Structure formats: structure tokens, C-alpha cells
Amino acid sequence: GKTDRTALRNIKKMWETAGSEVVEMDSERHDLILAAISHLPHMIAYSMVNTIADIEEKNEDILKYTAGGFKDFTRIASSSPEMWRDVCMTNKSAIVDMLELFEKRVSSLKALIEAGDAKGLEEDFTRAKGIRDSLKRQ
Image (cartoon, rainbow, N blue to C red; front, top):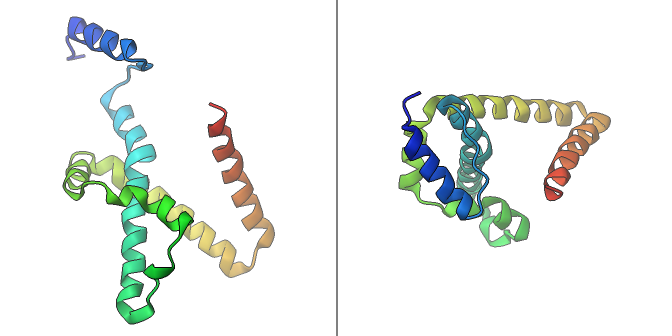
């Protein structure tokens, strides 16, 4: 559409020279992908830290017990709050869509736990493990 083809070719060449694989896509697809693989994880990490901080405020002294898993999972919550505020404001629709999908997934997990559905939990975790493990091979 609006992108100057010469400018696009030059930018593409620059990134390829730097070792990147350049994929062209429309802005809606870009915003959806980034909301799913970058923005949603940041929103979850910020929310996870704030959830534990909420419990901590009730004098539960939880933060002193944090270890590798929590610190690995929440590392990205150390990112710039100002930048992530701006990301949320510029990609609001896609981020809200991803948060809604995540809420549904968490509700489903909660329902499996409440129902004591060990088989369903294992299937859910096995699916996620298989998908995550496949990323290592890419």
C-alpha cells in the first residue's frame, strides 16, 4: 500500500545484511502477532508480579521465597513501564483481544482444577509442553 518500495527494499537489505529474515505483512497481522508473542507475555509478567505484591501487602512475606522459576517467568516485568504504557496505547485492540483469549484459557484451567480433572490437566499441560518443546528445534 503506502510504503515506498525503494525504501522498503533498502530497509529489507539492511536487516538481511544484519542476519535477519525479513517477512512482509500488513499492519493488522503484525499487530496481532506482536500482541500474542510479545505484548501478552509482558502483560502477564506485570500482572503476576503485581498479584504477588498484592499478597505481600497482606504481610504474607512471599517475595523472599521467590526463586528461579518466578524470576525467569517475570524477568520481562523489569521492562520500561513508560514504553509498555505506550505499546498498550498504540496496539490496544490486539492486546485486549489477546488478554481476552488468555482469560478464557485461565478460566478453562481453573475449571479443570476445580473439577479435579487430572486427565484434562495432564492433556492441557502435555499440549503446552509439546508446543514449547517444538520451539527449541526451530
